[in-house]
Image (cartoon, rainbow, N blue to C red; front, side, top):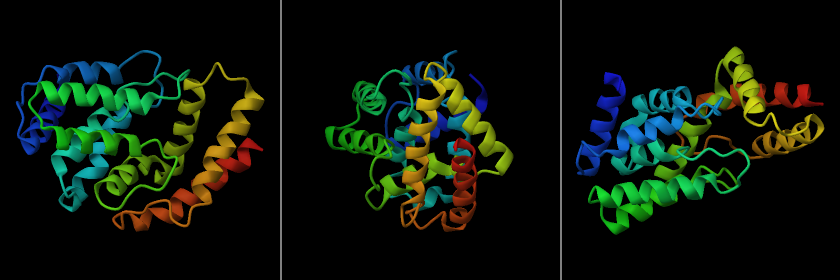
Length: 205
């Protein structure tokens, strides 16, 4: 394992007070390296951790937030609609084996479920995690456009007209929100995210 990932896992585990040698560490990284993935990869996970790093002190329970981040896309099945629930189950099983208590496991589960993005997250760590996960929306235009291509590649089996319609619905859902980033930490990203989303929606027709 690259030292950077090892260091991140160790810090997250220590923040939770669990064994830093949890064997699931390598297993979860292997999931992000699955060959069918195009966006929900180790690159996405890395971009999330890079985004979180300068605002880590804003977390209420940073160990739980980081462990939720590790597992939030652990299951990525483009044909399924319960990826977040399955990812949460995977995380909870791993954390229980590592000795994490029930209440903390429940909070990790709730954080992962917030990344469904089907509703505004609760204030606090859920909002921070969701804002980190949605950081790609405020990426530089070239990276955002690459992200859109990666999402299309993950759903290559969906016919073009259906994909465009569904993708427009998703992106317009974000645009319709009063705020895309709600934690109060990433307010400066709001304008660029809306510009990227508007450009993408226009391309979709």
